[in-house]
Length: 133
Image (tube, rainbow, N blue to C red; front, side, top):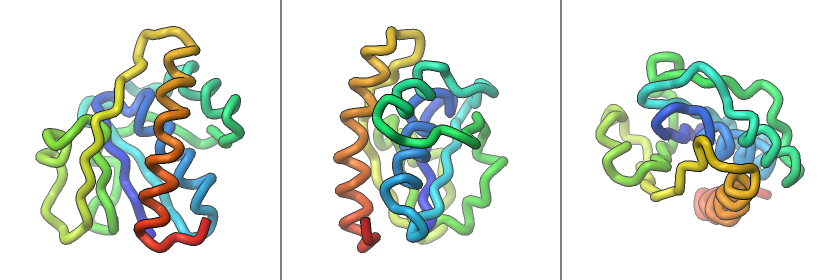
């Protein structure tokens, strides 16, 4: 199962989701993330929140839609609501839209809250997709 998580800067939410999907889905998931306007860096709060929740943040980078093979994805997940889906091609991939708070520039507690909120959503999505957790 190949999933792409999309947000604005690929700095906070989508890298979190990428690492969580990899961690929860194991070998059954190839998770990727991208931003509409990537900042070129993953926020330290993102990395720390992932570590605190037991997810491996290694290898996370901030990238744009042009850096990912969109035609190979099975599922697109917009973390900025339905408007995010308008940036993605019509490929036959399943399309999911979530409204996830952007913790950019906030304190570590906010990053942790956002991360804790993402875990059950991602777990539920993977279960719906039939991925063995």
